[in-house]
Length: 63
Image (cartoon, rainbow, N blue to C red; front, top):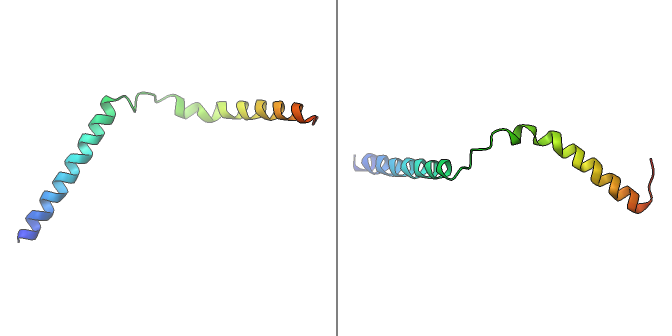
């Protein structure tokens, strides 16, 4: 019976630690930017194309 009490105390302490970590991350502003991740892939393609074009110009490759 004492093992059940020990397991309950351990699980409650782990849950409280995770709750504190979550609260700290909310207060530090980690979840403030919700717009940028949804459109990030739209802007990465342009930067890859422009960097490839610059690389091709340096190497003398034409399409």
